[in-house]
Structure formats: structure tokens, C-alpha cells
Image 1 (cartoon, rainbow, N blue to C red):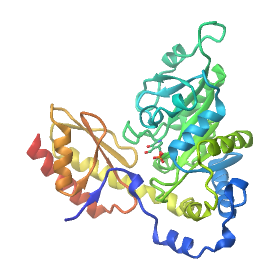
Image 2: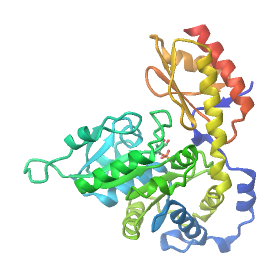
Image 3: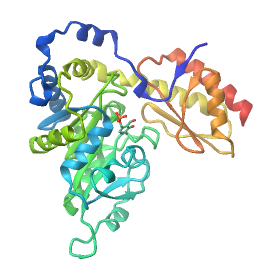
Image 4: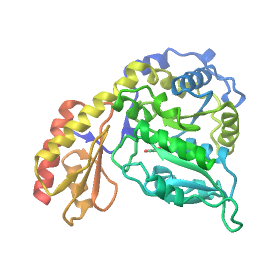
Length: 349
Ligand SMILES: Cc1ncc(COP(=O)(O)O)c(C=O)c1O
């Protein structure tokens, strides 16, 4: 049976070109990265910093670790941080910010990742007030996973920066999929990252590396983050063997490839809309399609029936199913998936 895995872009595997490059490596391209001596990791970090427009970068094991060390490096226990209410850091990072960072977490609501600034201002603590913890840092997520891969636009980020400056906060971007945002708007990634102090992006999602993420910011920030990475067990020694995939992933042609995923996602979204079923197909900016059931239904039954038809997807809430397009998913797969999803929905709604 044909299987189309639309659960996540984390299921991607490296391209043949990446494998060729890694297979051609020798021991001279490896060293102890905890001692700063792995030439491939150093090359990747320099390349990433330049591309993202920051002074320095650090290779970390995962997006979760990258976000955590970014928070730890810019706060103290007892500080308050502001997280969007359905952000990955708040929902899906095991509460590490609270457990490990000792941080107070305050959530803010948004429309597809963009908050109202009047409302956001009301959440900021009064520095003079003896009873309150200090508001220290605000996070944004771009593209926004639970808002269906929504792009938080450049103007919105600029306004957020003004807000950050006015309130003397730090600004962290969970940019797990920031290159999807850049490709989606056809602008350099620095158009987004120039407004934030620190950024994390993933190599292991649409960029299809097997492992790893990058954090970037000032040199001072990165030297703190390096120490926190060690603390949380992310010192990886001869890590060049995995960093090498990232060197190819950050080539312009590989970043531009994300556009194929966006076209496929839009095609899927349009196909599902055409069925005229009692579902809401959320706006599709990039590579994530979310459908919301407008009738009460056991969503797990839909997921199980889809699985039986060879379509793997994820239920992100009691009403919503998420489909993610990525490297390895072809236009044919999308046509097949649309047909299969239509059949399952028609039978079950
Ligand atoms: C928006 C966002 N941030 C962070 C992460 C965490 O990345 P990782 O799975 O590498 O820890 C994810 C993972 O899906 C994500 O979607």
C-alpha cells in the first residue's frame, strides 16, 4: 500500500547530494566540538551566522534545546517571559523553561501569531511594583506551527521590535521554520531576523537534515548559550559528522526548494476546499495545512481511517488535523492524498 507521511516535516531524510558529501568526509574534518575543534561544526556555525545576519551561531541537538538555551542565556530564575498561547515552547517543550530555567510563563493570545499591542502592553509588569516579577523576554514563533504555518510578517515583527525597545525586553524568535517564512514571502531571511535579539532555526525539518538546529545572536549571547548547551547535555564531540548535512542544507538552492512544499500544501488545501464538506480549511501560507471539523466527530476515528488508507496525519486538537508537506512528498502524492482524504471525510462526516 502506498504510504504518504504528512505527519511532520521532521520525518524528512537527507538528499543523495548530502549523503555523497558526508560519505566523502574524513577524520580531518572532525574534532572535539566541546573544545571548539570540530572544523565542520565551526564552518556550519559561521555559515549559519552569516546567512541569518547575526554575529555568531551555535549548533544544538534540537529545536527544543535551542529554544531552552536561548531562554536560559537571557534570563534568571524568577523572571517572567511572554509566550504565545499555542506556541511550541509553551505547549510542546515539556515545560523546560519553568523546570530548568525557573521562569514564570505568561501567555499572550494572537491572530495567527500577531498580538494586539495594547493588550500585550497590559501584560507587562510594573518594574516599580514590589510584588511583581520582572517581565524580561518575549518570544514569537515564525512560521507559526499551530496557526497552520502562518507567516508573522515583516511589518508585524518591526512593530514587535518597537514594543520590545519601549519595554526594555529581550526578543527571541522560535524560527524552527523561518526559512519557510522567507521563501513564502520571497524575502531574505534577515528581513525577519534583524528585528530579534536571538533566533533558533531547525535543520531537521523542511531542510531535511537528520539532526540539529542552530541558535544565533550576539557573540556574548552565544558564549553563554554554549555553556548552557553543555549543562543540558548538548556537548557533542565529533559532531561534524551530523553538522555536515547542514552545510548543504544552507545552500540557496536547498532553501528555495521549500517553495515546492508550499505549492504542494496549497494544492492540498484547495483540493480539500473543493469537496465542500463541513470542514474549515485554514489559510495556508507555507507547508502546513490545518483542517477543522465543523461537526462534532471523534477525530481519532478519522486519523485511524486515514492511516488505514495510507495517509499519515496528526490530530493537533480535538477538532483539528494537521498535514505537513516536505522533502520527499511529490505532486502525485498530493493528488493521491487529496483523493483519499476526501473519501475518508465523505464517509465519516
Ligand atoms: C515551531 C517549533 N519550534 C520548535 C520545535 C522543536 O524542534 P525539535 O523537535 O527539534 O526539538 C518544533 C518541532 O516541531 C516546532 O514546530
